[in-house]
Length: 264
Image (cartoon, rainbow, N blue to C red; front, side, top):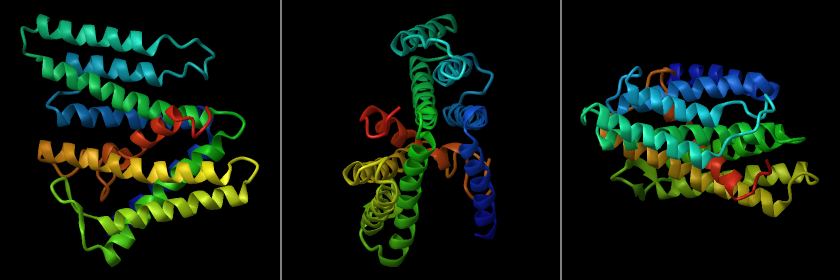
């Protein structure tokens, strides 16, 4: 537990500082997390990082993460690039005579979209002007509030299992507590910054961050259970890998962007 706390504080401090700085510092941080995360994802699915299918998956993910806006370059169509990536992965299954199967091709396509779009949404929120840092802080604050609330309230009052077949330690009481704490934190943002976010919008952001964040956690738990692993990686001692730490972010930020709850 001591190692977990120390690692969490140090990693959290670095993350907060680079998030506040923004620009290229924040972009490089997310890019590194995405690259490490995709490596974890590929290895989980039995692909070495240098495997052609992995390399195509990396390329697809990097399309989403290319700094188009920072370089003031027009972004190509995302749907066109996804189709091209699909074609290349399917062609690989033919060229390798099914040593790379269609299942493997589909997994790499999924991974490139899961990580690429997820981390790209985080960049879009931070780069939104003029309150990108505010919206990023509100989003992460709501996610982390849900995590903390669910953990402590679940430990104190948890009795009913939320989804034991997927994550046996999560409880209904903890889940509800996480939503409640997230709503309170989001509400505080609206109280102290009424000109930037209304009470209703803040509560919707808090609700989305809590519910979608917990679902993102369950998605990763389900996947790890299928693969028979406890953690996706060992980047952070006591915390696991990038996918273990960013699972909720990768679902919450795209939803906040797609629903327009956070302007980009």
